[in-house]
Image (tube, rainbow, N blue to C red; front, side, top):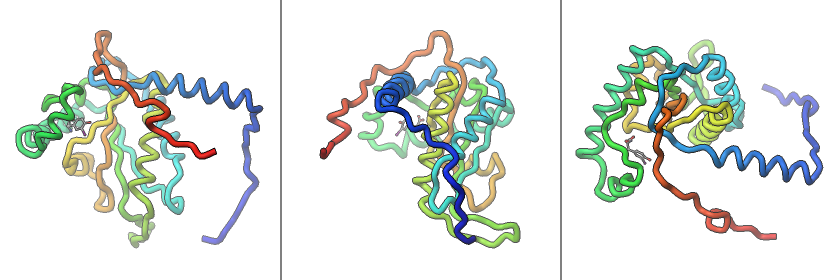
Length: 222
Ligand code: IYR
């Protein structure tokens, strides 16, 4: 496709003060995001999930290949199927695959093989990464920076869901091959992440974790 440009349709052009106020406001909003494992079954409308997926799919991607696909699962039978398959993998993980060091690192999170949230939360969003593209005739074309692109899209999805007032859990049962089978995804895709989302239970508990400070996470050269 040849280069075809249009004028930039929107640029906020805020004053320095407005910019700082907005940066503070966004940081305050996003600091309230916490990974939750106690989900209530309170329904969440499909329209909210659709808007959040559209926000995620606006992520930048290598050569604008948009190498992702989002499968939103509200169906109870499919959620149950995913829970059974995920718990089978997790049993292998906790009993055999995980190193002692890994299990020790997980201790503060209090995770185990039981994944009731996979059935209880109103929505699971399985994010698939497309290793290559397929045109209308079934010819393959290359995708670039796929893990980076899909990672950014997942971050934007989690942010969009949090901004809508929902809680999320980024769940990566490993391996996740069962998702591709259950959800009947094509050969060029592999499951990248399973995002559980919904409302927390009234008595939801989270681990008492601290985030690193600005000086720990960044270095500035001015
Ligand atoms: N997939 C397992 C283990 C697990 C691994 C990491 I890295 C985590 O941050 C949390 C859990 C599970 O979901 O229990």
